[in-house]
Picture 1 (cartoon, rainbow over the protein chains, first blue to last red):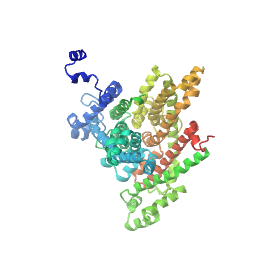
Picture 2: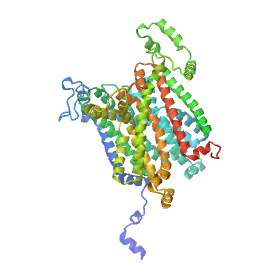
Picture 3: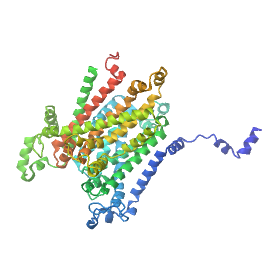
Picture 4: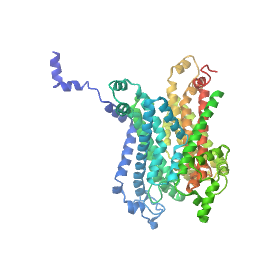
Amino acid sequence: MTENTLNKKYTTKKEFFKQYKKKSRLQEIWQRFLKNKLAVVGLVLFTLIVLVAIFAPLIADYDNDAIKLNIPKRLTPPNSEHIFGTDEMGRDIFARIVHGARISLMVGLSSVLIALLIGGAFGAIAGFFGGKIDNVIMRSMDVFLCLPDVLLALAIVAAFGTSLVNMTIAIGLSFTPKFSRVVRSAVMSVRGIEYIEAARAIGATNKRIISHHVLINCIGPIIVQVTLYVANAILTISALSFIGLGIQAPTPEWGNMLASGRAFMRDNAYIVMAPGFAIFITILSLNLLGDGLRDALDPRLKQ
Amino acid sequence: MIKYVINRLLNMIPVIFALTFVVFTIMYFTPGDPTAVILGNEYSEEASQQLKQELGLDKPFLVQFFNYVGNLVRGDFGMSYITRAPVSEQLFGRFPNTFKVVIGAMIFCVGLGVPIGVFSGTKPYSFLSNVTMIIGLLGVSLPIFWLGLLLILLFSVKLGWLPSSGIDGFSSLILPSIALGANYMANIMRTTRSSMLEVIRQDYIRTAKAKGVSSRNVVRKHALKNAMMPTITVIGMNIGALLGGVVLTETVFSIPGTGRLLVESINKRDTPSVLGCLVIMALCVAISNLIVDLIYAYIDPRIKAQYSGGRGE
């Protein structure tokens, strides 16, 4: 009898069990993420910015519009040809912003990668082994936390010059102590759980346990921090460029566009609007994304 | 309590020492010959050698470092390469301006952020609470320097209410304080709101309400002190960022402060001044962290108890 009713509704066993199948953890997280409207807005905005950065050469001509001086057209207010207007050298602000996105994202992502690799390694070792090693590593990281990260980046740039590579390294190093803290606390929360003990019981080496069991389970909080720190890194680059110690003049970068436009803003307010807004929107999208990811990954933390 | 303070002060010494070492090392490896910067056009091989001897630059790295630290303890930050005057003169001449801006920003962000956060935490679904949430969200993402420019455009250029640069009088402090503090105000507001929301759901709040305490007193006497812990943490964490932001604010508003001095010295390759600025700022961060920890200990009896032999006072 029961078998018959079963057969009526579900033709195969597989289909029958489908209704009881647990959703994978990733699916659950994704669904929670989608429910959060602000987070989705952040994701969409950030994806757009990434696409703009990738396809920048197709959107605007780098050499002719973003770099070449065009003095007769200088300080043209926004119009149909130049939607954000032109700057004090007659360059199209829209083209410069589009190409500026490339630098911001590139430095932002790679500096956070540096911080994650170095800081993450120290943090994982400190958190996993604890005791004396933990003390030594974290004490030395604390030293750096005493200097605001903009200043640490400034010191490094001051000493080694303002090339793109130096800036990326400077920002990456200045974020390193923070990442070591994040990874350390994530590792410590995982360290005591049974599956780590089980892995050790079957004879896995420390290296394997850290890379295959511990880190994989810490990935949630780390991703959240990566998102938020990419925002922070982008802010730092534009800040450094704004005070003249970052990306230098002809290269379009949002911070140095603001710096050079500043002298002309009294009569041409539009000149500082678009670059500032570009920074603002990028930071906002990453903040929304990061907050959304945090809530989706750990619903208990939801505020 | 005194034991705790002394303990914390002693802890500060190795941190500052190590940080000085790090910054000194970074600056030591700056490429280029400092004597070329000092001598400029008068540069010659002989003069360079002589100057190096005078300044102790020919000594080994560690000797130079300990000389520097030795002088630092006596309040001597060395001699500026450019002005050839003691760095300490410049530093102490400019520091008050930075101090004013930072204090102004602190007053702005704590004075506005905490009350608004508390209010919207106690009435979470009101119109005002939603507005503050949106402001908080946008405020966290606003770059200091852009906000500064926008404030100048609106209040100085358009309305002509407030000066756009310099540092004379109270009115010139308003815009820099807002620009510097806005980010952290949003942060403090958000944290206060969410910790207030958390606390207001606790059992002891229900108990207080049940025994007939007025809702104003519930917030003031029972909720506030408990909700303040995360807020104080955030304030403490932000002091460092605030001091970092000073560099930007001082650039935007042309304020002759420590941050501006730092940038100018970097551009002029004036290493002793750069070093002095960084050490002073790190010292400020360390001292303000100490103050935050003391406030923490004052509010949370558990921390106090830890340092008085576990027996409490």
